[in-house]
Image 1 (cartoon, rainbow, N blue to C red):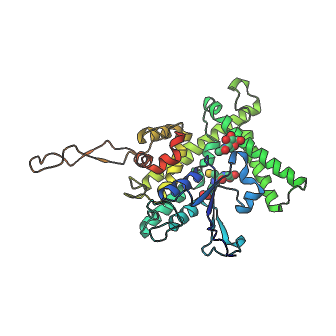
Image 2 (image 1 turned 60 degrees about the horizontal axis):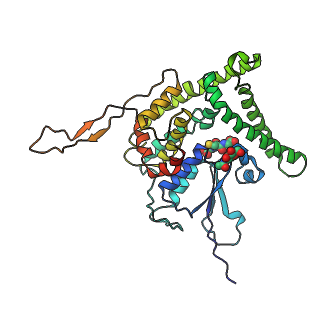
Image 3 (image 1 turned 90 degrees about the vertical axis):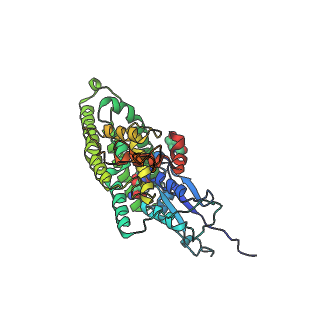
Length: 361
Ligand SMILES: N[C@@H](CCC(=O)N[C@@H](CS)C(=O)NCC(=O)O)C(=O)O
Ligand SMILES: *[C@@H]1O[C@H](CO)[C@@H](O)[C@H](O)[C@H]1NC(C)=O
């Protein structure tokens, strides 16, 4: 009997509500990966599925995205040691970029082109690293900005149900796993147990900060009043201080129209997912144009925050310059706008954007 040729596939663990998972989905589209090349497995964060013993064996940090990939020489029976998990968004996207190129055809049914998304020069690589590090830094964290996203009681009433539901789902899952361990129904290491206890206590802390979030001001207890004030302060620190600095720094580093210039790169898939999340958290819409989306974001950051309008875009003129009409300019200049607005317009036009975010408009 001959050994069946099982072609091992990469598996992407993701949650469609997680910004960094969506960055990976965008990368798959931009790279032209076929549907048959990567298996997508949903890990529902609001059910705490990322804390299950099974998932923690794959990624002990319990985060998505996680990409499990076969090693190169895969056609041997010893499958166990032949997989590795990539648990960091930047590394996952870099891996996906390298693994599909014009030279190295993957086993695919996709005829889509496989553009190289990693920058080709040392200078551009350094710029890419810097921007990716900036938007993955803790003050830029989509999770932080999701947890603390109300600066007044009215907004709090709107956002707290979804944040509370998310946190309660996590807490429930953690309690369930801890109880299973207590009852000896499952066997986990001390390290895993400690991980669960730590996650449970940070989740409970966050929940406590939303205590009585559904009540109006006059009905609050003393404790509730204090918790609410603290929540508002944390929101202000996250958006008006932390994120404002990140956005200002970011817009200085962007070249335009894409992050690094005329061509799309790995940076843009990170940025697209991140910016989409921020605009959504700001009450904006996927279908907003660049100026509308970025104005929303600026207003939501608060404290009169604005970005520099330093992007000058040329639009083609109606009539081409000709010797008979030398006064006609070749291009007209649009009013300057923030670079992030130009980036937004550039990214939202791409098929990858419509595929990943289109339906959620
Ligand atoms: N540094 C990691 C962060 C990934 C991350 O934090 N993912 C979030 C969702 S966007 C997550 O899995 N959170 C679950 C948790 O921390 O419990 C990366 O870039 O991959
Ligand atoms: C994840 O779980 C939540 C809570 O049970 C549920 O409302 C949501 O639909 C689930 N998401 C997906 C993509 O299945």
